[in-house]
Structure formats: structure tokens, C-alpha cells
Length: 380
Image (cartoon, rainbow, N blue to C red; front, side, top):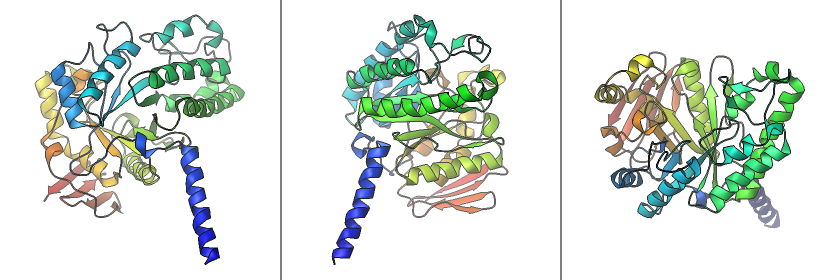
């Protein structure tokens, strides 16, 4: 009897240690239900949300990320723009988790914090030749190997989350930080120091925010050159799959890996945000030139494949985002009949047969053919 009791004690101890190291706190998680497709929102909007827009968002999801530039020009900076609408949304939905977008690598000029970074040229990331490392020739990058940069970044985050109305942080650009192409830019030694700096940044952010605020990062991405899974599980609560079925992640191999990574991350207790696309993005000039109504019709016609792919691997605390970009005008809050159909809990895990995926829910059966990019959902 004593041996069994000891075993139970040690198992509980291990679970407690894991809980502490990952920073996950179910109290911080948005309320999750399987009754319908779990949908999330992620956008930045020009100007503040109208009352009707805020009511719609607050009544259709418990999770939203407000992006860089949100609320401008009604607000003087991104920080204020997010704060204004976070208060509005949370007043309408007490279960709503509003996440503050704060890029972990790029100096975005719409933030008040940008002016601090701008005044410290010794913080600016440089190439091994001593030149400024700029994205697209204009956006400065953070040198995460510099403790002073990390201290400023974490203090900015803490001020917004702990002293404001938001419930957590969206840390973007991890995949850009980790790209092996940076070795040529920075040299191996600097590259290694920056990778270590990113890990320290996450740990330092968790220490500053505590366990009752969410840390979301971007993310999981599979492509022919490399598979990026849930590579930063320590101290984070949620991970995003941003490019399912598009750009460099549109092969059957990449899509299967993304779905399997979602399944694995979800089974460890992580929130997973799965961004599906209608086959087009805001970068497609021909698509963007179409009238809004036509873009919406295309999205309505093409929803089955990304939705079924999401449902194939979704676990508890998995959410779908479906639109063609990151601004409010990119279909950020468009709603589809499938989102209102009864779904119910999953009855089994995903079954993989070659490139075909199947799964059953209480009120729906899923079939996906990744090779031909087609799918069926039988709403029972």
C-alpha cells in the first residue's frame, strides 16, 4: 500500500513540476466548448471597433488577438488602440481573452515603445559586416542576445498586460528568428547567441507576467525544407499554425505535418490556433483586386477543405481562424453556415490512411484528401 501511495505522490509531483515549467494555467485559458466549431479572431482594424462589431466578436468567440496598428488613427498608438477595444470586448463577454500583439523580433513603428527602441542605436541588430539588419530594407530587428533589449521588451509587455485590460501576449516572428538563413547574415556564433536569447526572452516574460496570463507564440510551420513544430513548449501556453495550405506549406507532406503537429501540441495541453485560408491571401494581387462580395463568395465555396483539416487534428483548446489576411477588411469577422452547425465532442482521434484523414464527432464525420485538396463533412 505504501509503495502505491508513493508512486501516486511522485506522479503528482512530476505533473506539478511540468505545470510550473510550462506556465500553463487552465484558469487563464478561454472557456472552450465543442458544441460548434471553435472559432478565434486575429486582426488589426483601422479605427476603433464599432459597438455592433464588438458585440458580434464578443458573442461569437472567447479569444481574440488585436494586431499591430489596431485602432489607429482613432488612438495615437497601438498600445492605446488595443487597450480601448480590449475593455470594450471584455465588458461584453466576461469569458473573453484579449491578447496583445507584441512582435518578438521586429521594431514596429506604430507602438509608443518604438520611440524608446529608436533612441538606443546600440540595441539595433547588425549583420556580421556591421550593417543594420533590416527586414525588407526598412524595419529594424531586435538583437535578442542583448540583455538590455530583452529587459526593455519584457517591461513593455508587463506594463501592457499586468497594468492593462489584456489577458496575454502574442509573441510573433519566432520562425524568422530561427531561420537558418540568418547564419549567413550574422555568423554562427551570433546566430547561436540570438537563439539562446529568444529562449531567455520567453522565460523572462513568463517570470514577469506570472501564470495567470497567456503567452502565445507563432508558431508551427511545415515546409519541404524543414518542419517547425511546437519547439518552444517551456513557459508558453499557446502556439499558432499560420500558413496551413498556402505559401511554402501547401504540399501534402507539409499539410499532414502541420495537422499532426497540431494534434501533438493539443494533446500536451496547449492551446493551438489554426489559421485556414480560402486558397488565397492578401498578397495575391489578382484576388485582392476582386470586389469584397466576390472574395467572400470564394471563401464560402472553399471553406470545407481547411475546416475539415482543422477538425481532423483539433484537440481541446484548439481554435480555427478562417480569412485571407490580418486586417479587419480581410474577412476577419466573416461568418459561415458551418460555424453554426452542431459539432459535439470528438469520438476518436484522427485516422491516417496514406494522404486521407478521417475522424468522427458526435454530430459530424470528417474526410480529407490532402493529395487532391478536397474534403467532405457529413453534418449528421
